[in-house]
Length: 360
Length: 250
Image 1 (spheres, rainbow over the protein chains, first blue to last red):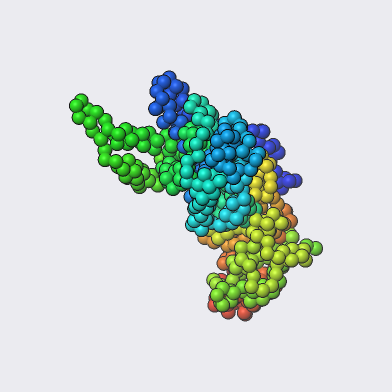
Image 2: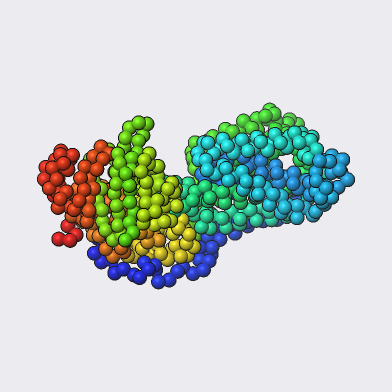
């Protein structure tokens, strides 16, 4: 290629026309729309079955979609593995508990709460919004320090955040009930709020991904030196994603509290961290579609393994897997998937109706 | 007249001096060359000028004011751009997005960044590459895209780290013409590090020669061509310093 035919210098070196407004959004919105349709289709089918256990299982699936998409917003775009995000889920769950439990019960079990919080009794959707805000603010505070770190140092520091939050919530008797269960959280049994929150999380993740900050962060993930030389303030872009993902994790935590009506600090610790990270990695860390489909696929596997552990009757005999085999089988399946597809089932692609989803 | 200056820069790595009191000026619209054998400290100096390496001693000034310890992204926003040996493109992104990222990093909206990226690719004559994935580009095009990316936002200065490495003579001649246009048409101050001494001699207004971390010679190309010190540093002959693809003003 030669440059001899290059046109003379344009006054500002800028193309005569900018792309139409919202062109990027219009080109890429099909991905969150398709993923949301998957969620809504599962919800409709669940409601049609009328099965209460299946309804509860699907509520768990939608909660995990919310949490894993929350993880994707930070981990997927920044490439920094975070072990601390379930800490923000814990913050969201307890915030929802503080805001929705009957004041009389709170005065008895959580007497250390400030007066205005003791008296508060909000509808679940308001408490969920405030819980998301609270978790996002805490993520912003932690993130200002953590986002200056990179690689394994950043990952270990996020794990320290999880341990700190767990330790505080496991010991602050008057405010969190320490290791005792906090009960009396209004239970929301209908499926739709969970489906809607999962859809909100998907659209938030998409909006961040197509934003300036999302593009800059992905560039920094792939080539940090060149990104810095391109004017990108990497810690700042990481902080934006960390805060948004912290808020989504908090939102998921609030809904988790309302799904079971009880919270304990250990619900939001290593077990949930492991399972949500596994779902993200198996689906494809760098893809929103991977995050959602990873949850759906692994949740289906977990459900099948649970049924097998509980026992399946074949005529007069009942076939049952030994207790604990669920975790082992899940681990083996994950290793097999990752050995064959190291970038996850979806890789870094997105589901779309078109061949290429440029400029995500 | 404004200029970007390295003033008495020294850099030591664990006691080993990579640069010893090196000074160098880059002026708008001029092409400066930085040459020297492998290990002379050329890339270290570019790293200091762009904030990737803190100097042990000395300072970098822009229009006479010290830049202190600004970070690379802050220096880029002040108009000091660079390329890297090996391109360092965002390989999973299309070419147009590679340029757009820099526009976004400089504070443009994505629409404005795309518009400028398209204009830049047009100006460089590589518009047909816009939708190609950067990771699939041949070597020569990769270098051009890296230069285009660095030119986003019209920086006042651009530092090119071995842009012609591995290029054939005709490709190097095209590159020379491009660098000449960048300086003379856009008014950008250019610093070019190159092992192709002939290209540098044919292209640059001013040349600084480094050896073992110190400046051993500087001046106009004609003076550098005659310098015994430079010949000695390269342990070569006059043939090594013959113009190769750099005769843009012949």
